Image: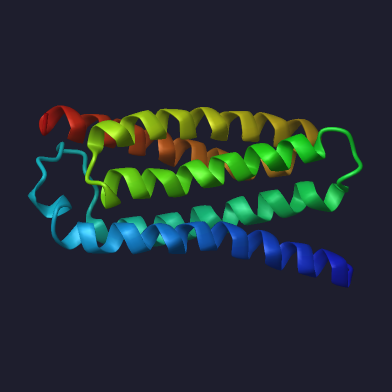
Length: 159
């Protein structure tokens, strides 16, 4: 790996983890207050699981983005794939703001559906450029699928 690759890897990881870090600003206060009082479905995982799960997912996402960036921005499809990645990263952050920050399960449903679509597009774009990068996005898509089901159930139980 060249020094440029190391810099790209660090930037990719920091960008992914920063989205999670900013999201925690909206999530953490609501977990101890608003979220505690919501009716939740039987399949709701314990709160302690979310931090480690998301950290692992953000690291996998960052590595996937690095693998695509490393191919080269002049390679056809790379810029589109990285734009899709940035869009899903923004939607990921927006979900935390809407669901936890604004206390809106219904708004969260809208954002998480858009997020799921954006992740799928990103996964497909990454897969077409470098299969390993696409594979690294699969756990994220699966987790957001579960999170969407949880969000929908919370919205229905509290409407």
